[in-house]
Image 1: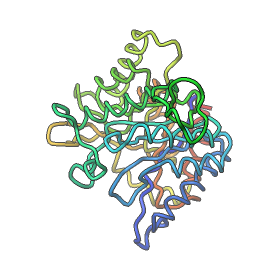
Image 2 (image 1 turned 180 degrees about the vertical axis):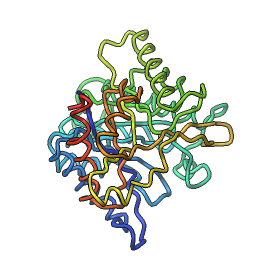
Image 3 (image 1 turned 135 degrees about the vertical axis):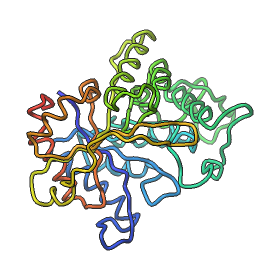
Length: 340
């Protein structure tokens, strides 16, 4: 069995070709798609975070709304850019959203991706400490968040508070027990995957990673997952870690699918640079008749290694079509691969 969810970037544009033409459309349709996915039997509704873009941004209002409208599906992010985050305020927001959802939050966090603007985190009031890089700052913010989510008191109480305090040092409230174990790190390199394992975070690996060996994308990603699991075991953690991978997968089961995705031009990995120094490999998309998809996906080593598969969805095509995309995988592909 494998958990199967969707991952939406929440793009919106006023173009007449888009069914998601405003920020309100993107947010409300995200809620509707999560409800539809739960009804179809999917396991997760995950959302990407981008700042200064016509996409989903600060995620906690959306996560709380999805939590209030659903009852079973996991609700998560992939990923929150920790360069922009106040870890203590984030712990409050995350705790509240998780309590509303009844403990279903799965928070993916990371250093973030290339941005729309230069050093956008500076506009949010953050900057690396002396001797730090922006990546160091993101990891520092993440470590503070993890520490706060343990729920232990650290702040000295006011001797004359407005309201009575419990005894001892105070913690950030509201606290949601168990959320600390549902934090995931989005790793693009093997080294950051190992770092995440040591800190006891689950692993998210997306449709791109650092090109570290020149091997096909799915092979490099599988090697990353294995390195992560070895580091997890060496760290002595007592629970089993979670690992997710993201893929663009479309089962061509009707004429709409063939018009949108039947062109057959994205069946190879691509090489590019995500910044001036980092050579990256971008994984291929899958779009084919179900029986062909089953054969292709059975050869994807990283999907086989992961316990969770996130299907990236074309959200601007609307809720109904994206629900159809998810249903086609659950119905026509997943059972044959032993995922259902």
